[in-house]
Image (cartoon, rainbow, N blue to C red; front, side, top):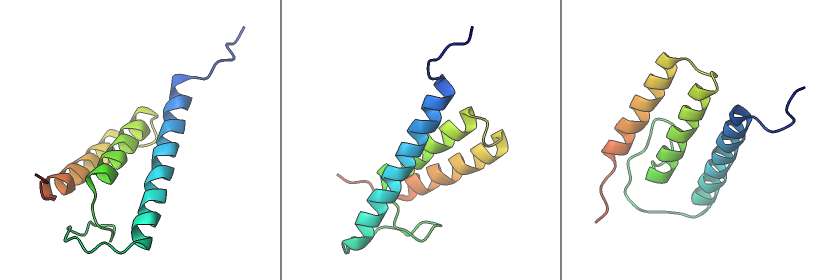
Length: 92
């Protein structure tokens, strides 16, 4: 007899989708308000934000755990995101 509960993988995919949607929503709101802060521009053309980069890292982890991407793709994404995060200025 099969269990009718939600699987852990499905929960992870749903969390990743919600994080991605929140990131897109935040990015749209940020574009609508003019920010004149000097922040480096990322590879995607948007200004990098630590919260956005960490959200992308969370999504990459979820995709790797769900076997949507292989290890090499995951490492490439992770390295790129961490390099961009390290390049951001530190707020004091």
